[in-house]
Length: 217
Image (tube, rainbow, N blue to C red; front, side):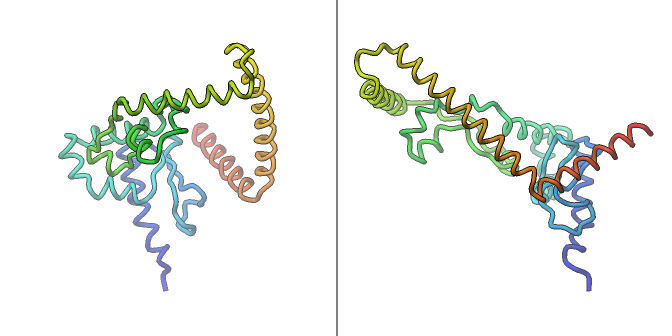
């Protein structure tokens, strides 16, 4: 009896081929597998440039006629998908000031932060603009700043200048950053000792060797 995953693999392979052709990518690799369909399919790496799940490929390929009708041609569809990746990789500076997050509830954040849009909704033309801050937003921010200022005044007393308080905060931040760096390095070293990391590193090494062999040919 043929296992279900064995039936799925040829289908996934064809979606992968068509997706690679659409995005103009020559190499692809299903992360965490040997590209043989014997392990669960999660995310496919297209030349280290794009990453798609099988579901996302199906959204693109199965509805290509709809996307071409909306955007004009296959090249324009590929550009929209590339723009979607740029959106997700955009600089975090697109988000509001950290102080605002302290006093906003979930709906406020949903309304004001940069929208989170999946590939399907992006291709369907989901609005991508952030709501402009209004008077309520400004009031929340100023109220938060006042509260934090009062807390610092209580901590550092009234004889301190703002610049003196800044120097104290800066010193505390640097100390905590150093502690965090040391902690992160320790966690990374522990992760490198796991079987999962060793397997992942082996796959990367094998892919690099295959790529080098291909370039030599």
